[in-house]
Image 1 (cartoon, rainbow, N blue to C red):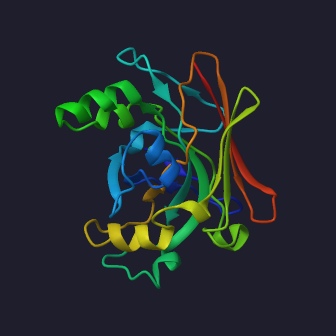
Image 2: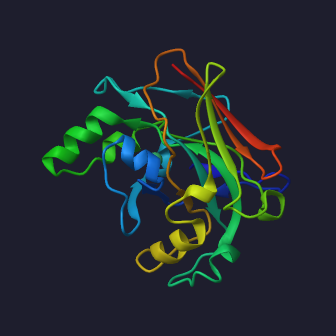
Length: 223
Ligand code: MG
């Protein structure tokens, strides 16, 4: 069983479902030649895809084009159904940084055929996760910076103020359809700058406070 850690709090939280947003930054939707969606695009990853700081991404042999996507992650602390936008942030236990590792060629082929693309996003090691920080430490979730360096070079850098659907809207929307539970995680979508990763690459994702301080970082390498 995979679990999430909240800095400063004893006891890990078992991870339930992982809910992910697609095309939730306009510039990223453009780079993949999609239209910016009118309602949230939702897909799931299995909890078994999670790895932690210091671990390795293992690229499945079925893909020749594995992409990085750095994203703000949200850990649900208090469950609920039909959660209002106004009360949505009260359900959050913490924020972190995550990587939505994607088999882009497998995803595109499935999309073209109108088939589900679960394998492209749900394979083992496809969900590297940092620790989570309580909302009192991060401040407004629409004020955060997210960044990804590969081998020391910045490849993605953006802010959660650019989310098409912000965290409170995502929680409210998803909870109309899926009951949210303690231990659920939301990947809120990636900004522009996605590209392929290769064997031996070192990926470092960071979550940055509005004041410029790095709140937490996540380092993983590609086997
Ligand atoms: Mg993504």
